[in-house]
Length: 228
Image 1 (cartoon, rainbow, N blue to C red):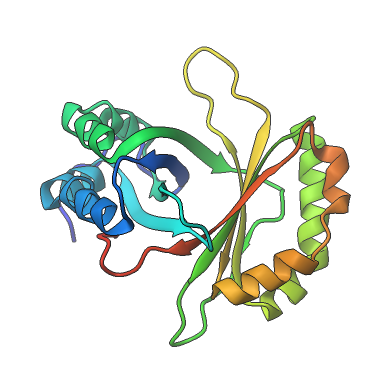
Image 2 (cartoon, rainbow, N blue to C red):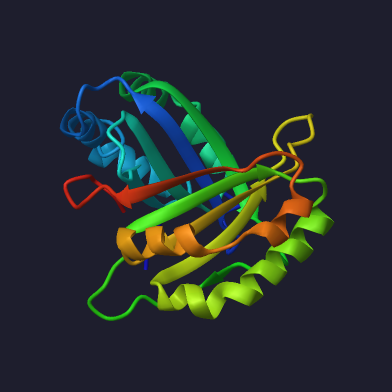
């Protein structure tokens, strides 16, 4: 059993940190080398874990040749995260890796119909889909997203969906966070994901949106990238 002293607010509630940006590197290989030397540095990894970083995964654009990079981290300590992202070494590493980036901390959207299913033996997550949209209210969005999940969970599982998770922004500072929802779908492979998105209808979510959703698809970066 670990004797590590974690932040006082580290508990069973988890939060999602998404970092989406454009890299300074000319190739995925160069970005990987820089990522592994900065975010993947053993001392840095140990420091992040000590502050409440439970997982760190890297994703590359699916079917696109561009310089974007997506990190999805799971944290259980907002104060630990705040301490981590304000560290000078962390800031220096992020500036070296990214030309521009946006980091957002999300908390579970209660009642929105999120679910996570077991991964079949011998398989792993191969791709993810993101949807980010402004909503008119969380009450309307919860009802719409829950109904959408209920109507699709069986069929989407047949296409290889592993998880369908809905998140809302964590209030930070004095200002009120934007009314928006982040959807993250985890898939066994890119083929099943693409086939599902090409055929599935999301018309029933329209009334809950206050603007057009932004969607994107991603593949896992691979075992050469340092993750935990």
